[in-house]
Length: 141
Image (cartoon, rainbow, N blue to C red; front, side, top):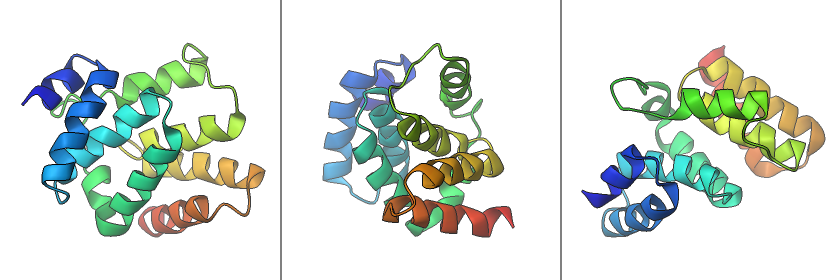
Protein backbone atom coordinates (compact mmCIF):
# COMPACT_ATOMS: atom_id res chain seq x y z
CA UNK A 1 0.00 0.00 0.00
CA UNK A 2 1.50 3.28 -1.15
CA UNK A 3 -0.15 5.18 1.70
CA UNK A 4 1.63 3.06 4.28
CA UNK A 5 4.96 3.41 2.48
CA UNK A 6 4.63 7.21 2.35
CA UNK A 7 3.79 7.24 6.06
CA UNK A 8 6.70 4.97 6.98
CA UNK A 9 9.22 7.16 5.10
CA UNK A 10 7.69 10.21 6.82
CA UNK A 11 6.55 11.80 3.58
CA UNK A 12 3.45 13.18 5.25
CA UNK A 13 2.27 15.36 2.35
CA UNK A 14 2.11 12.46 -0.08
CA UNK A 15 0.74 10.16 2.60
CA UNK A 16 -2.22 12.51 3.16
CA UNK A 17 -3.46 12.11 -0.41
CA UNK A 18 -2.97 8.35 -0.36
CA UNK A 19 -4.61 7.94 3.05
CA UNK A 20 -7.58 10.08 2.03
CA UNK A 21 -8.13 7.66 -0.87
CA UNK A 22 -7.93 4.69 1.49
CA UNK A 23 -10.38 6.28 3.95
CA UNK A 24 -12.77 7.29 1.17
CA UNK A 25 -12.84 3.68 -0.04
CA UNK A 26 -13.25 2.33 3.50
CA UNK A 27 -14.39 4.94 6.04
CA UNK A 28 -14.23 2.33 8.81
CA UNK A 29 -10.48 1.77 8.36
CA UNK A 30 -9.24 2.95 11.75
CA UNK A 31 -5.57 2.29 10.96
CA UNK A 32 -5.70 4.62 7.96
CA UNK A 33 -7.61 7.28 9.92
CA UNK A 34 -5.09 7.07 12.77
CA UNK A 35 -2.20 7.63 10.33
CA UNK A 36 -4.11 10.40 8.57
CA UNK A 37 -4.50 12.25 11.88
CA UNK A 38 -0.73 12.24 12.35
CA UNK A 39 -0.15 13.31 8.75
CA UNK A 40 -2.62 16.18 9.10
CA UNK A 41 -0.73 17.46 12.17
CA UNK A 42 2.53 17.44 10.22
CA UNK A 43 1.09 19.17 7.16
CA UNK A 44 -0.37 21.98 9.27
CA UNK A 45 -3.96 20.87 8.76
CA UNK A 46 -4.70 20.88 12.46
CA UNK A 47 -8.41 21.51 12.11
CA UNK A 48 -8.80 18.39 9.96
CA UNK A 49 -6.58 16.44 12.36
CA UNK A 50 -8.68 17.50 15.35
CA UNK A 51 -11.98 16.71 13.62
CA UNK A 52 -10.82 13.23 12.64
CA UNK A 53 -9.21 12.71 16.06
CA UNK A 54 -12.47 13.56 17.85
CA UNK A 55 -14.41 11.21 15.57
CA UNK A 56 -11.99 8.39 16.29
CA UNK A 57 -11.80 8.87 20.06
CA UNK A 58 -15.59 9.02 20.25
CA UNK A 59 -15.78 5.81 18.26
CA UNK A 60 -12.89 3.90 19.87
CA UNK A 61 -10.41 5.82 22.03
CA UNK A 62 -8.65 2.60 22.99
CA UNK A 63 -7.58 2.14 19.38
CA UNK A 64 -5.29 5.16 19.72
CA UNK A 65 -4.29 4.53 23.34
CA UNK A 66 -3.26 0.96 22.56
CA UNK A 67 -0.80 2.07 19.88
CA UNK A 68 2.62 0.51 20.28
CA UNK A 69 4.95 3.13 18.76
CA UNK A 70 7.76 0.62 18.14
CA UNK A 71 5.72 -2.15 16.56
CA UNK A 72 3.63 0.26 14.47
CA UNK A 73 6.59 2.53 13.62
CA UNK A 74 4.60 5.43 15.02
CA UNK A 75 6.45 8.76 14.75
CA UNK A 76 4.62 10.34 17.69
CA UNK A 77 7.40 10.07 20.30
CA UNK A 78 9.84 11.74 17.92
CA UNK A 79 7.33 14.39 16.85
CA UNK A 80 6.40 15.20 20.44
CA UNK A 81 10.06 15.66 21.35
CA UNK A 82 10.64 17.97 18.38
CA UNK A 83 7.56 20.03 19.27
CA UNK A 84 8.44 20.29 22.94
CA UNK A 85 12.03 21.40 22.35
CA UNK A 86 11.00 23.83 19.62
CA UNK A 87 12.66 21.99 16.73
CA UNK A 88 9.23 22.03 15.10
CA UNK A 89 7.71 25.45 15.69
CA UNK A 90 4.07 26.38 15.88
CA UNK A 91 2.99 30.01 15.78
CA UNK A 92 0.04 29.73 18.12
CA UNK A 93 0.31 28.24 21.60
CA UNK A 94 -3.21 26.80 21.37
CA UNK A 95 -2.30 24.90 18.21
CA UNK A 96 0.84 23.58 19.85
CA UNK A 97 -1.16 22.26 22.81
CA UNK A 98 -3.77 20.70 20.51
CA UNK A 99 -1.12 19.02 18.38
CA UNK A 100 0.70 17.74 21.46
CA UNK A 101 -2.60 16.55 22.89
CA UNK A 102 -3.33 14.56 19.76
CA UNK A 103 0.15 13.09 19.46
CA UNK A 104 0.57 12.31 23.15
CA UNK A 105 -2.56 10.15 23.21
CA UNK A 106 -0.61 7.58 21.15
CA UNK A 107 1.89 7.30 24.05
CA UNK A 108 0.52 8.84 27.25
CA UNK A 109 -3.16 9.61 27.92
CA UNK A 110 -2.22 11.75 30.94
CA UNK A 111 0.14 13.98 28.94
CA UNK A 112 -2.47 14.18 26.18
CA UNK A 113 -5.06 15.30 28.72
CA UNK A 114 -2.68 17.88 30.21
CA UNK A 115 -2.10 19.43 26.79
CA UNK A 116 -5.78 19.51 25.90
CA UNK A 117 -6.51 21.17 29.25
CA UNK A 118 -3.85 23.79 28.49
CA UNK A 119 -5.45 24.43 25.10
CA UNK A 120 -8.85 24.68 26.78
CA UNK A 121 -7.54 27.35 29.16
CA UNK A 122 -6.75 29.50 26.14
CA UNK A 123 -9.91 28.62 24.21
CA UNK A 124 -12.51 27.61 26.85
CA UNK A 125 -15.49 27.64 24.48
CA UNK A 126 -14.00 25.24 21.95
CA UNK A 127 -16.45 22.33 21.78
CA UNK A 128 -13.94 19.92 20.27
CA UNK A 129 -11.41 20.57 23.02
CA UNK A 130 -14.12 20.00 25.62
CA UNK A 131 -14.97 16.66 23.98
CA UNK A 132 -11.31 15.64 23.94
CA UNK A 133 -10.88 16.49 27.62
CA UNK A 134 -14.07 14.64 28.53
CA UNK A 135 -13.20 11.46 26.58
CA UNK A 136 -9.56 11.32 27.68
CA UNK A 137 -10.45 12.10 31.32
CA UNK A 138 -12.57 8.96 31.42
CA UNK A 139 -9.53 6.88 30.45
CA UNK A 140 -7.11 8.62 32.78
CA UNK A 141 -9.32 8.50 35.89
